[in-house]
Length: 353
Image (cartoon, rainbow, N blue to C red; front, side):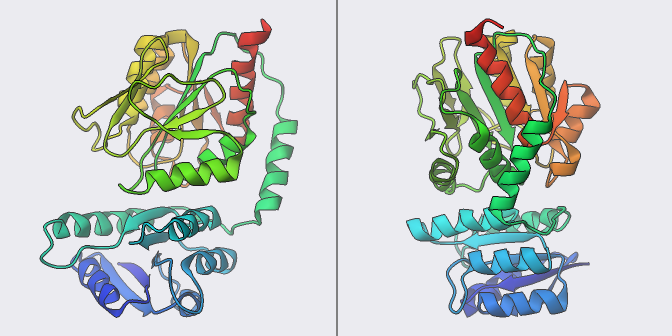
């Protein structure tokens, strides 16, 4: 039985969440809190397997509550948000930075045409997130120092030259890893970065804004027909598969979902393998399932450099783990060392090393 704690200031939403979750026999709502402070107290007392967390609440908001819980009694936290106000979206991604593992939209009311879809997504996500490995969060300053130390300790790699494009795929736990990698990439990186991040519909714009503000690396929501610039990152928009032509032009399509996703990492990696071959690097980060795994192998077979995130640093070693089993990843590294490899691979293109 999976014990769930609901932290939400609206009585109606709390009861709706409870009703939805307890439709599944494997889920039990162990407690409900009306504000962040009460949520912290119940988290310590009840020790739930997973917490759903609202953002805007009296006494203490969801970001601060998430940070406190992850410092004192680490628990998988799913942010459940309804507002598209810039301040709430900002706090939502701050909560991810503090250790929350996923984002969901608040459930639709009973009778709404999207109610069943919304309920299924909530149940599935809560069950999946209950299995996610979480650890006590360190202050960001200490994390930055640790990242710098890892970079300085890593042995200088000896790699071939010619990388013109970096393609990255990520799912559960991905936003924080993307933040780490992009924070370490220089603004004059002589290649573009194209990214698929699985995220609940409606939050991709907030993710782009948060990455822009928190990394110092230029990040854009990709547009069809746009030519990618070196030293810039492009994220796939909601509900579009993203690809890239040999000339560096972004393509968007509504082709069928792959591995239940659109945008699909598999779709991106396949177009990169076909159009860039040995001139690309592919990176598969934390996440559940197998999206992008076979296509990372395709990239490797066509001469690309392929990397996967290591188990120790993953929230979920699903996609990277499958890539390792398949022999698709040439290098299996923590995010900081993935950034170092990318810097070396791409920078050599213009230095002739």
